[in-house]
Image 1 (cartoon, rainbow, N blue to C red):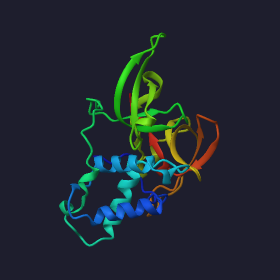
Image 2: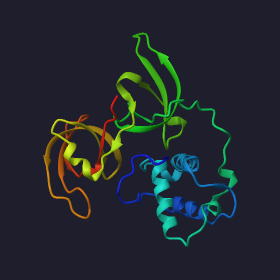
Image 3: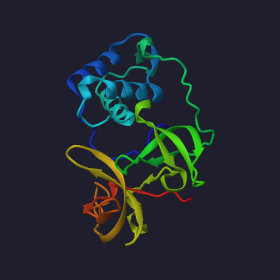
Image 4: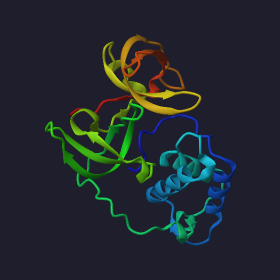
Amino acid sequence: MDRLRPRNREVFTGFTNAEIEKMENFLKEPKGVSLGREFYQKLAGSFNRSTGRAGKPVIKWTEIEGWFQTRLQDLPQVPNSELMIPKCMEGESSEVMQDPSELEFEARSSKDGAWYDVEAFLAHRFLSTGEAEVQVRFVGFGAEEDEWINIRSSVRQRSIPLENTECSNLNVGDSVLCFQERRDQAIYYDAQIVEIQRRMHDIRGCRCLILIRYDHDNSEEKVRLRRLCRRAKS
């Protein structure tokens, strides 16, 4: 599946008016190529490079995907084959060397210490210390945001969103990946579970409150299960 880390959260609403207008126009185009992951990634890159997004949070391709999925639910039923985009969005075939493994990965950025989904591994090198690094392109980001990442400490299999029934498997001291929501950004950080207030579930799902401590700054926060991912087993 193309979707990464699905969650029952509200659709991203931080698009500018110009971005929304552009996406609306795509829905009206009669011909082009079908909506899909490649389109969402290219559109995210286009938005993130535009002057209108200067000083605003970077958009992930999954946020654009969520907008289209929500918008399409409001439209009359139309065959997917008729939902097209202009051929001007079709770029040259990428020269990026895709990772041959079927596994999906995430990598920790040295810029903010947060974890992002990996779109492709571009190259690798060995430092004088013997440590191996890989050049990473992050999903939803352009080439200008590529980074050299330490393979041993900052690349791993993609973490998996926890389901409503999995709260019973959590214990104090467990390592998790937490979706940190702030006024100016919303990104994933490593964290440790400090305390679990177990509660009865209701129609909304898990209602437990989980106190976590972020690894990067030792700050603590009470969160719902929907904001947590479990680390993939290595």
